[in-house]
Image 1 (cartoon, rainbow, N blue to C red):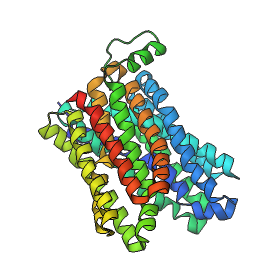
Image 2: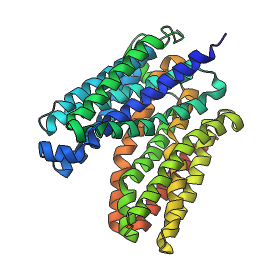
Image 3: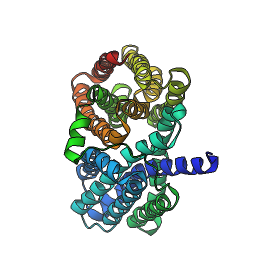
Image 4: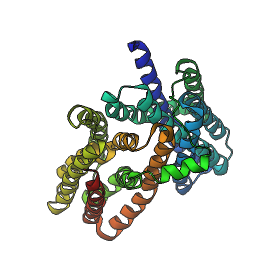
Length: 390
C-alpha cells in the first residue's frame, strides 16, 4: 500500500534537489558587487562565472546520467549535494577569479548530476498517471532555489561576502544528509543491463527519435536563456524602458514560467494521455503567438505587447523542460533512462549556451525585429522536428 506521507516527503526532497543548483550559483552571483570590490573582479569575469557554471553543467550531463544508472538515485542525489557544497566552500574561500571559477564548475557539475537523478526518481517512484505533472512541478524548484540563493547572499552585507555562500554550503550539506536518510534504498528496478558503459552509451545514442527530441530541447531552452540574458537590454534599446517597465516585464516572464511549468504537466497527463510530444507541439505553437506579440511591440512602438510577449514566452518556451524529460522517459527503456536523461540535458544546456549568442548577434543587427524573427525561426524549427512524433 502506498504511504501518502512518504510519497510527499520523497517529492519534496526531489524539489529541494532542484533548488540546490540555482541556489548555489545565485548565492555567488548575487554577491557580485561585493566580489568586484573585495577581489577586484571585472564585469567580464563576473559574467564568466555564470558561463563556467553553465559549461560544467552541460559537460557533466551525459556522464552524470550514466553514473545515475549505476549508483541509483538516492546515492546520486546525495553525491550531487556533496559536490555542490564542496563547490560553495571552494568559492567562499577564494582569493581570486580562478578559484571562484573552480567552485562554480563544481556547483555546475553537481547540478548536472541532479538533473538525471531527479528525473529518474520521478519516473520510477511515482505513478505514470501523474508523471508529466510531477516532472514539470519539480522544475519549480529552480526559481525557489534562485530566491533562496539570493536571500543567503544578503548575509554578506552583514558578515562579509563569504557568509552567504557558506550558508548555502551548509544548506546543501543538510540536504545531502536528508537524501541519504529519507530516500528509499532499493528504489530502482533491476532490468537487464548491457555489459559495459560504452555499450550503454551507444544504445542511448541510437534510441529512435531521442536525438530529434533533444534538438527540440536545445531550441526551447536556448530561447529561455536568451530571454533571461537579453530581455532587459532589448527593452532598454527599444523603448528606453525604466525600472517599472523592466520590473513588470521580468515579473510577467517569471510568472508565466511558474504557471506554465505547472499547467503543461497537468494538461499533458489529464487531457493528452501523457503524450509529451503533442504537448510540446502546442507549446511551441503558442510560443509563436508570444513571438508575434514581441514583433508587434516593435511595429506599434508600445511596450505593453512586450509585457504580454514576456508572459506568453515564459508560459511556453521557459516551461518546456519538464515535458522534454517526460518525452525522454517515453522513448528510453528503464535501464537506459538515467543516461538518456543526461543526454537530453546535454542538448538542453548546449542550447542555453549557443542561442543567447545567436540572439545577441540578431539584436545587434536588427534590434527588436531581429529578436522576434530569430525566436520565430527557432520555434518554427522546433515545430518541424516535433511533427514526426504526432
